[in-house]
Structures are given as C-alpha cells and as structure tokens.
Length: 169
Image (cartoon, rainbow, N blue to C red; front, side, top):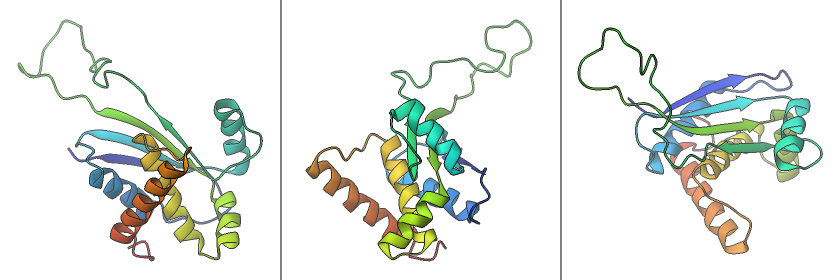
C-alpha cells in the first residue's frame, strides 16, 4: 500500500490543482523515506478557517499561509483495528497493518496568493513550496534557528526541483 495523501479543497478564493498538489506531497513523503501505509491530509481552506486554527493551535493572530499538524505518537501503531477485540469471524491469522497517520497540512491559497505576488512568483509555485514545507514539518524539520532554516530551505528546493519542475506536472 503506497503513501496516501487525502486532499480536500474547502475554499473558493482561488482555483487550485488539487491532484497535482496531492501528487507532490506523496512524492515528497516517499523521497523522505516515509514507508508505505502512511497517511496525510492536505487541506486548502479560506482565511477565516486558517486564522482560527492559527489562533487556537499556534496562539498567533490572523491568517497564515500554511500550518502543519503532525500526529506525535510514540507508538504510531497504537489504536485499534476495525472491530478489533470483538468475537466473530476473523480474516485469517494475520492482522492487517494499520496505517501510520502522520498528520495534516492546511494551506490558505488566499494568503499564498499575496505572498506569491510579494515574491514575484505564480500562485502554483508558491503553493508547491508550501506543500513541501508542510511535508517537512510533519516529518520533524524546523526552521527556528538559522542553520535549521538553511537546511530546510535547501531540502525544499531539492524536492521542488525533483518533483515540481515549475509546472506542477
């Protein structure tokens, strides 16, 4: 079972190529060594929604371009299988492998569009950067210190040059 990225476009400010961004997230995860069976949600939301998430979880006011919510579980296989622990017919001696839930990436295209204008790039390019940035955050990358930021930016650019090629295809 491959890495699965579940995408949803829950905003109407900008048209986005959901399929291309889901594919980019999947390729970036696989390039970072994420094993098959992992799951990530990639959500595109409006300014109100991301501002609420930013305040609730990051304690910051106003909208932002991207938020990542890693599921930090010491034992990612914890939890239960559907119908686990009940009596009844079984599917054989082997239990199915439970998916590893890595977390959620939430992107606001309206904020990304403003940043794209500021950076002199197309919205698709800015959004692709945010997708990869979000993936790396789910995997523990950070940019609080200068040297961390430099390493993370270099990795983002490497993944974008390998999987995005400026057009999303």
